[in-house]
Length: 423
Ligand code: LLP
Image 1 (cartoon, rainbow, N blue to C red):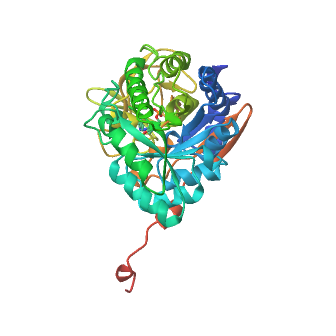
Image 2: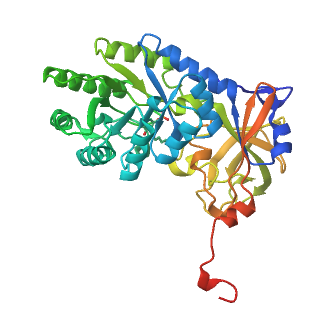
Image 3: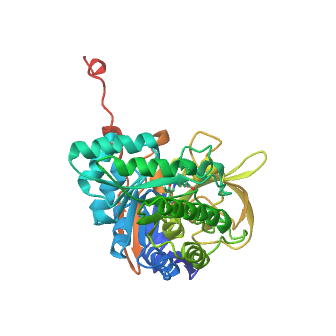
């Protein structure tokens, strides 16, 4: 459920009409609903009410805006981070270091040092090589790294290939059969405190069965480690639960069904469970509002050319996925339009031959379900400034990231000294 609903013929974010926001901040812009963010944070927590004291670590990559991370921190969420930048965001947003999980397949020694200095609660290690490097960094810093081993369970998440992470041919995690030996090795090296296991098999998962299979693998490993005399304190079940994008498609399993499955599978594990939800918390809580620059009649189709492009929301281009597109002030009637951006690539297409309400130049549209992996994956391709982000809360709203200015865009570059005027 979200809080982007029409009122008096105008699409609103909670109590704020989106056309009012467009007047104020210009287009395109991302708009997030605080009520939806809060609601999702609570729905997920409630879905796990049978789990004692879970660590809910919001996957910052989904939407790293400081206001969003702070809202979740206030709801008691920790953070799952995959870079020093994300860790800095989590800390700046007020997430206690003990509630930060540092994940990622390519942590540099510098990032390891930064994580240890900050005192993060858990570092998810993805290879033998990484474990030994981390031990060296920790020993040099005179600290002990709290480690969970990320298992590659060789399970197909049945999601888009580019966001499936749990098969043996993927770069992620450690093969299950190597975990016991690596655990024992980790216990023996100074600088490492072996704490737990972690798994994450992919994103936008629409079927609980592969998740359950992965969690069972983790459970088997946990048992094997315990049988070998090791103490396992934590199990991190990752994120990945899918959300509805296309109203015409069956909805993915809801958080309650996920929570019931988790409670069933993990009963008796005797560990503290951690979760890393991203998309589920923020996906439906955001829209990208764009203006129709013009409606163009091509030889084969009619195009609605928007002022937002693939650089602002790359998901349709990158994964070929569906985003619902709604007129902010729908006109009566029906039309079939292909929604494209201004970027000079045919891939800059949001939707092909989409049945919609008629649109004219100047009309506003909202690309729905853009709160996750939207603004954060944006680029300045075609030298298009990054668009603003606005957070609405009831009747109030704030620009939580201003539009990048042309000064900032150009000011980021330097002209090589030998190319300077007169140089
Ligand atoms: N934990 C780990 C280790 C992850 O790699 C991810 C996502 C998450 C948690 C959060 O997963 P979520 O709950 O959001 O599914 N850009 C893609 C999605 C990439 C997901 C990357 N990892 C998209 O737009 O669909």
